[in-house]
Image 1 (cartoon, rainbow, N blue to C red):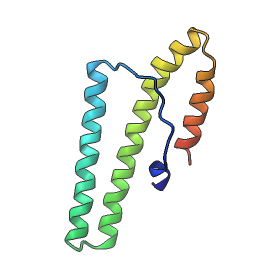
Image 2 (cartoon, rainbow, N blue to C red):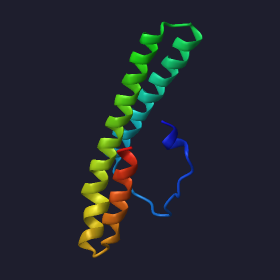
Image 3 (cartoon, rainbow, N blue to C red):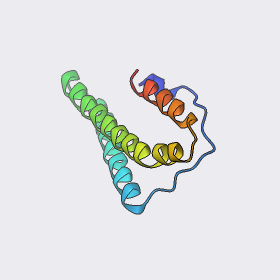
Length: 103
């Protein structure tokens, strides 16, 4: 998880999301946030290590699912639109993003 904490170059580009996409992604993040709070509570309550690890695994799976949905949306919209517009550098950007996700 530390890889996500290193400083990243943030693009100046923006993505206008439709309301359904925004709502789905936000709900996923709120559930993940709740799961992380559950982990904190378990630690505060001296829960048994395997129980905490099981919950942490669920958080990890939920975050991976969030990333898969976001990536699929990105490919369907931003990447395909850029390629159609002749902006081939988007493929390199996608490959860089995939490499970071697959660490």
